[in-house]
Amino acid sequence: MVAVKSLLQPQRRLFGKLGFGFERRAGRVMRVALALAVLLLAAGILSCAGSGTDRMHTVRKGENLYRIGLRYGVPAAQIARANRISDVTAISVGTRLRIPAKSARATRGNSTRGPAQTRRPSALADARRKARRDALREGELRFAWPLSAPRLTSRFGQRKGRPHEGIDLGARRGTTIRAAESGKVIYSGWLGDYGKVVIVKHAGLYRSVYAHARVLHVGKGEFVEKGRRIAEVGTTGRSTGAHLHFEIRKRDEPRNPLLYLP
Ligand SMILES: [Zn+2]
Image (cartoon, rainbow, N blue to C red; front, side):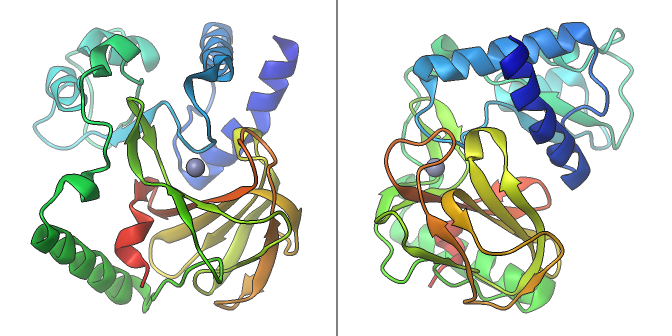
């Protein structure tokens, strides 16, 4: 338990800092709950890091816990417990809530395909156009593949009833990982299930994440140009075989990288 807790600490601190939304200060009960959640993950529910169990939601005008619960398919009471809210009717606009993952039973029967796969081709083309236009508008961003010969081994979206928050690209150990766009390195080091990871903050609200690396070639605070070698493919953290887990996030929200990539 101690090991799990200490594993969690840096991850929570970082995600807190990045606005990924772990609670600023969790009590002992919360910590034990988190440790249990991690143990469950370790029991083999996930096969890849970045497939986080919890999502974040910022309360908007006119919303209440019940509505939010309906939207995510999670009971309001469960959200209240996860966020230590005693009065479920009193949540204020702008509050950031942690939405606990649905139980395996609740998600069984759902499609295991990512949203992009279930759409019609024209809808997919629309989504791509929209995503790429947004990245251009936000910061003149044109994301490139982080590997020179990318081989997609796992898509973004639901995977065995759990969200996979990025894509997996199979590659040999030691393959060069390149920055998908220019930006500032905001994290370079070990991060729980991600293993050795680089996180780059781009113009606008975008970030890209490169996980399970064997070696990291950049340090926090460094500015990297698009295409710059930042790390090497490995299998550190929670990973099955050498691959790159690649994410594109806008604010704290994971987006389907395939919509942005050429
Ligand atoms: Zn992955």
